[in-house]
Image (cartoon, helix red, strand yellow):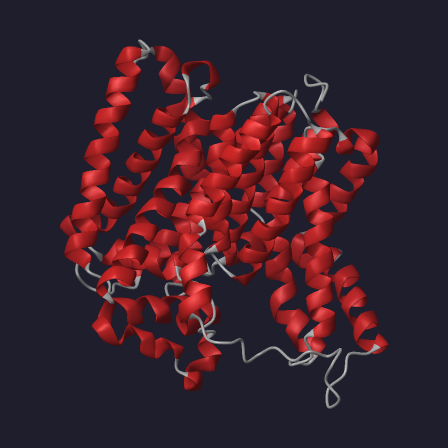
Length: 453
């Protein structure tokens, strides 16, 4: 029981820090539902605690667990005090024990029950997939056990562990080990369940907030029980984090437009910076969203607060990008698994490669592993028609087209790997990461009646 409690402490600290910060940032008139607040807080707090670990690494040249714990506890106490002060000033109940407050609690319990298959599967799959033990958990153990020799993970001989991948997920796992002082296999498993819970909860709250029908929320059910979804969420891969922070960034951008809120623009910038530190694909997604934010704020949804909101987004994003800039600028080795097929004479890109890529796309979307989900989503877009491109939600199709276009270009130009094998091991994960955005887009397009933007 004690070990279980100690394993849970880091995640509880992260959650409360995130909850407090959102409480502090959002003014009273821009408050959102408790559940929406809760599921944004899980990811925000995780990012803050992981970044504390990163800066300890940068300053002390090792993961300094005691200092990391002290800093996080100081942040916890400071944000709790500020949150209490703000709620008192705005005359808001910090804790609400009324009957109305029981509904969110019931929904949280219901979501936990729905996650039971993931819990069972994760316990049969305790070390995750091959990318978990070979890349993410390997890096976490390097950081936790190697002291000042942690930079040996960048040795070229370890190229199969993708040393150019960033450290968000490994640092989150190290934080999870802080109070037990051992590299338990259970912590990465718990991290994956934490982010699965957060992703599903955030998707539910987003659909409920932006759509006019409660039926839209039912689309969560087939996703929860989808075998491939359960497998990938419990594989302990960083694609789960990409999916969560991508969704959080887009949702905050949409809320900043809907509420004309610089506070949500600020949160969107923070989440976008976190997204860049999850994985190479996360860096690509963050860059695309950064560019699209210009279009979104200044052309599609231009208003009196566009400049202010964009500045809040950009400044917050720049601050949250600091770990990525340090990692990619000073630490990460070159990607030895990249060969430019456009310039290479030995292994050139070809039209055959192009045809194989698009054939894989087609057969992946109709594959039985997805049980018709992508076909259902495409059908939903046909049903939604023009509503899928309203000013509020147009950022989602613009992102999906830009991101998939960039991924396709990378598949075409990087000829280091045999393309059929490469697609067979990565394409499913690419689609998994963008699935929440696709689901939110279709749901808000089909049932979006209450908002005219």
